[in-house]
Image (tube, rainbow over all chains, first blue to last red; front, side, top):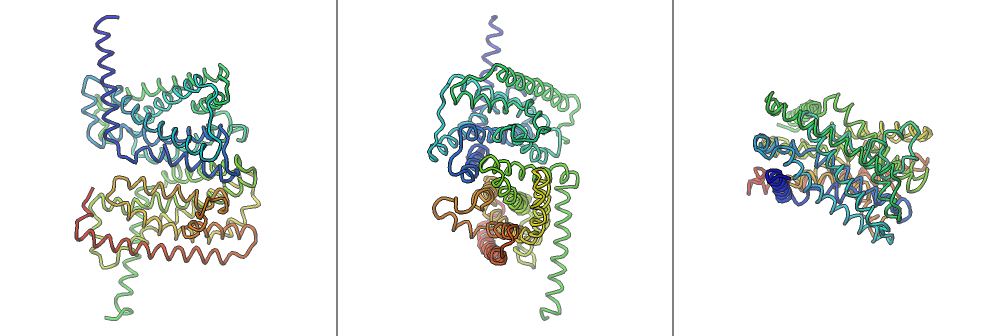
Length: 261
Length: 267
């Protein structure tokens, strides 16, 4: 490892930290509350009331992941559009730190905030209804949760790059939320869906995360195939996000058309 | 000039113009490709998802219960969460004072402008219920749901009043979008959409009856069960009138505050 490489890594970490801090400080108090508190709490409440007062571990964790998915679409997916609306996008692009590092830093702040809110909501709700979630295998649970978070952030970056290139971003976000909640089997197991609607779940990383988190909560580490599937879908999202970001940079630098969308 | 000679024709002409402009405004935001590709599929998928939650929690009967409830609640997504943009954007774009200076009071102007969102809500509800019934093989529910279309219209009216109140109370706050989304989600819990009202904790069931949608949804369930439905329909209409009266009061107070403190210009 050369001193130049070390200096580059240190610089990158500083950019990530500063971007995350800026995002955390500039957010309104209610940001992430819909995805982190309201959505999981509403899904938990209606399921518990309809089912006699309690929800099982799988459903509770699924409601949390549903909140994470909502945040992926509505919070992380709209990051680049917010930068453009604020007029800060060109400034970020021309600086040596680069767009990807700043976006990942900002996305991390939003992810941490959302995850904390979800954890508190699901924890308090399940405890209040007399069926608190107990994590029997904490290490696999933490690993699956970490992968789920990275996956959500990667997909959010992909969406962000796509949303900035279209005027219909909000409408697309609107249409994108529920197909994943249904087909991904986050709350409702895929086995409940018609046979023809089951295959797309394999492409949704949060589907694998839901299975692994439930297994870990019940004391199992989950089959290797599921870990591989979660890692592979996450990697796929990250690679696609990388290509999409390059396309955004091309539109901004070579064509100069990003502001015209 | 008497009311019949001058004021009434001008008022009706004005409201007709507002309704026509509102429709054009709506189509500018939601052109047919966006409606068909985004808004309506979202409505259908949300209802199907909630129905699956009902299935997960309480089996096939819970699914049917939630399917009907979610179809009514989807109206609030149009009339509360989306419709609120009418007022919030007027304030954002600095055009609200023009409405305040108009000859017509603000509430009838807003209520008339809301009609496109109310229509979207009713269409979304009927379409979602129909597709949901077909998807789950519950076509036996369809005649009852379509027979209860009038109750969905009542729900659209009452939730429009709630949407006006929510938007008015959100104006000038960064949390405006948060508030209208929160209200829409709360109706899903408190309105008896997924679970019967007697499952609500404490005195919340009593509160639920003064909220828009609750009685209208009970009316739909009455029609489906071939029970007398008029009582719940009348209750929903009364709730709608009460919420419009509340909206009138909120807008009146807000107008006075806006004149005295310039709050319309606050960002």
